[in-house]
Amino acid sequence: MVTFVDQVQLHLQAGRGGNGCVSVRREKFKPLAGPDGGAGGNGGTIVLVADPQVTTLLEYHRRPHRTAENGAYGAGDYRAGAHGTDLELRVPVGTVVKDTEGEVLIDLTEPGTRFVVAEGGLGGLGNHALASQKRKAPGFALLGTDGWAGDVTLELKTIADVAFVGLPSAGKSSLIAAMSAARPKIADYPFTTLHPNLGVVEVGEHRFTVADVPGLIEGASEGKGLGLDFLRHVERCSALLHVLDCATLEPGRDPLTDLEVIKKELAAYEVPEGQVPLLERPQLVALNKIDVPEARELAQFVRADLEAMGYRVFEISTASREGLRELGFALAEVVETARDKAIAETERLERIVLTPKAVDRQAGFRVVTEGGSYGTLFRILGQKPERWVQQTDFRNDEAVGYLADRLQKLGIEDALVKAGAVSGSTVIIGPGSGVVFDWEPSLTSAAEVQVGVRGSDDRFDGPARRTNKERRSDYYELMDAKAAAREQLEQERKAGMWESDE
Image (tube, helix red, strand yellow):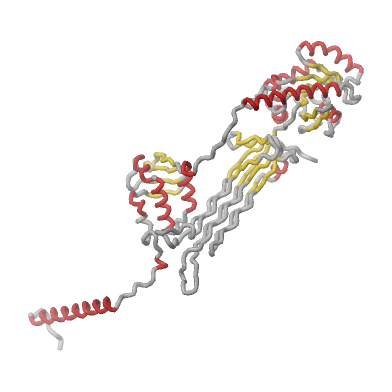
């Protein structure tokens, strides 16, 4: 049995970037010939792709957890780590992507549209890339950053030109089967259709798509039954066709009463901002099942009332195919008018130019003062400081000193002073728990965390060997000190301060 799923929640984890490598090149007669550690690879990115061949979100309902590949670590001899493979998730055209707060991230209405929903982490630089004139042999490398992790909601809204709406068993599935090549499930009991069916109708030179929306019931706009799920698929349609059953035997039902029930539910459903309300869109009426004599009489009886309301009315029979050709041309006319109107509105819209931000403009940060039971603390929030903290190996003193230098160049120390921070103030970098430390203004020189001189590496310093002159001078100083000590002892003995045992 095929299940139709039109709303799922995905749990995504993009790939983590690989760590950079700390390595020293070794050559003949040059055991320490310089750093040659390569950078780590970037983590894999998760991309949503609108694919016309995909019609349901069932695959993601069964497997909602998706993880991209991590980047590989860098290696010596300047070898960079491999990038993680991007993960492409193919979704139906018409899928709306929302975040956890319900905000729309993108509407995938065009086939082939690609959207990066989870960006992979950056690979860390190796010590070769960190070398400079002042830091010729870095003894550290940068760590890879985490990829984006979080939840998104995928919501499918069927894209069709015309939506067939009506109460259960009105004959919508039979109508779409008669007008197109679609073969939906058809049976003589209510709620046969449990999900929208799409069909392509060709009438003359016209070609358009129709959607068989499952039967509506009273209270559908309030969530009764599966009404909200059904009505969602009417949002994108440019026209509506009310399919009314003229052969129903249920007491209290007739075409006019059924139409009022449908209109009430369509009017109560709130479409997204910027879209035309459902009842303000072009609407036609199809009086179905006129192959039954009593139904034909009823259709002729109510036709005048429906036309007085402003509807174009068509008497049809899906069994004998009577009236389907006229209905097809009428629907094609409405669709072409809606398409021309949409093209005209698109031409009037001002062209949007997307300009990427300059690299130096993305270095912003802000200092937020927070109060707590343990006093005031200062939180640093910003893309670069937070990323730098992730890239730092806090077990390496030189790496911590490098982080201090980067933060100082960014102007964070001046910002902390302006915010009122003093020596010993608690500073947190990043949201949540972040990285906590007691701030000292002298940290900008990295004196507290740097073991050696900045730009140097003790491993490359040879043993300190004294010259002959230095050794001779040290020897004379030692002999003079011993002679002075013997003379002082002799003077103390003659003065009677102590006696010899001999």
